[in-house]
Image (cartoon, rainbow, N blue to C red; front, side):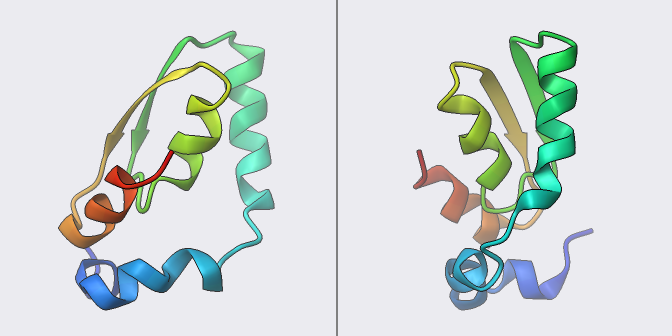
Length: 78
């Protein structure tokens, strides 16, 4: 079940500027590198921040997100 805040299109569109410090993703990127992953399933991808971070490095990413508004934002990125 998605959280209402992530389902609201107006809130989803401004989520990233208000949560710009994504150093929390460093540990997950380290795991991707450690396992030499070429494809990653980003379950709960939100607005696509982590998916794009990996995609620009040539990693194939499949993003799944239950909140349609967040997924629409993700589809416009990278």
